[in-house]
Image (cartoon, rainbow, N blue to C red; front, side):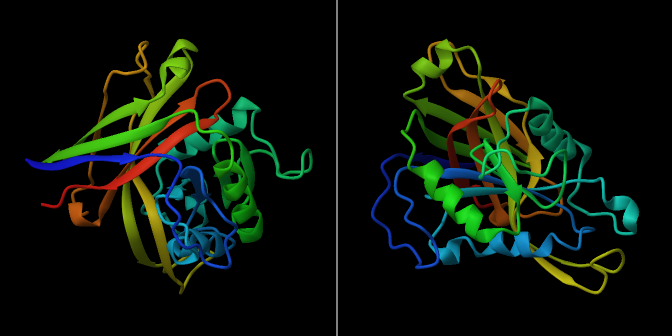
Length: 266
C-alpha cells in the first residue's frame, strides 16, 4: 500500500502569476464541470479549453476541472469509451434541480446538452464559450470562502481511499444539507475516433472522470474525517491519475470547496 501525506488546499491562494488570457483568480479553487461526448462535433473546442487551463495560469490551485462524458450521443455511431449512465444521471440531477442559472440571467439553453459547462455548481453555459468561462471562474473565486479541504490518499490494488477533512465546516454541517463527493480522474487522454460526428479526429482531453463516489453527508460536528473509496479502471496507471473531493449542497447544488491531489504512485 502506498501512502500520500496530507496536502492542504487553503485560501487565500498565493500570488502565482496568471496568464494574460485569464482574469485574476485569487481567493479559492473553483470546481468547473464539463459535460461532453466524443460523439458530439461541437465538443472538441470545450475539451481543448479544459486541456489548456493550466497553460492559462489556472492550475489546480485555482481551478479543479472534471470532464464527465455522457452516453446519450453513443447511438450516433461512436460509443464514447469514457461515457457512463451515471455521468448522464449527474447532469440530469443538475437540470432537474431547477437551480442552474445562465450568466446573463434568463436567456439560456434548457435540458441536458453538450458541451455544457457548470461553474461552482451554479452557472451553466455552452462549454465552448471560453471568455464566459473565464469570467465565471473569476467571479466564483472572488466569493467569500466558507470551507477549505485537506486531502490524503492511499492506494491498494485498484482501490483508492481518500480521506477528506473539511475546515470551517461547522455551519455547513448544521444545515444538514452538504455532501462530500470524490472523483477519480484520468489526467489526460488521446482518442482516435473512427465513426460518428468526429470521425477521423484525434481528440485530446484532460481531467476525464473515470469514477465517482456516492454523495456522503458531512458529519454533524463538521470536523470528522470523511472517507471515500474509488476504484480505478484496470487499464489506467496510478501515475496518470488524480483524486478530487468537493463539498456540495444537496438543495442548491452550490459547491463550497474543492481540492485535487495526485494519486500516490505505485
